[in-house]
Length: 162
Image 1 (cartoon, rainbow, N blue to C red):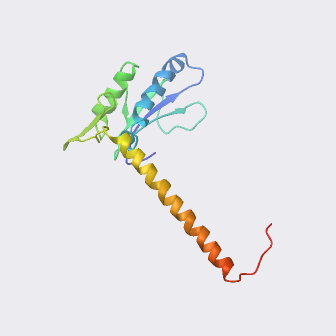
Image 2: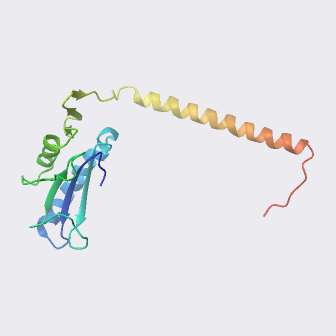
C-alpha cells in the first residue's frame, strides 16, 4: 500500500449482493480520481476479495470500506455512511490527508487550496509539443542516416544480416 497516498479500500465477497450493487458505483468513484493526474497521485481507490486473500484487518461484514490516510496507514478509518459516490468522495475529502474533492475538482490541505492547472489553451500546447517532438524525431532519423552513410563511405566491411 502506497504510504504517500490516501487509499480507500473495499473488502468485498464475490457472493455478496451489497458488494455487487456497490461495484459500478465504486468503479465510477475510482474514475473520478484516476481521470485527473493530480488526484491520481494523491488518492487510490481499490478493492480486495476478502474471501480469497489474507486481510490484515478484522472484517465483520461485506462490503467493508476503510480509508488508509497518507502517512497514517496504521490508523485506518472505517466508512459507515451511505454507499453513494458523492458520500464516499466526501468521506475521502474529510478524512484524507490531501482533502481531495473529486466533485469540485480541487484539493485542499491545511495550508489552503492547491491551485489546479488551467485547462484553457492546453489543446494548442499539446499540438505544439507534438509537432516539436515530430521535428526532433525527424532530425534524429536524418542524423542516424547520415552517420550510416558516413560509415559506409569510410570503407566499412560488409556484414551478413541475420
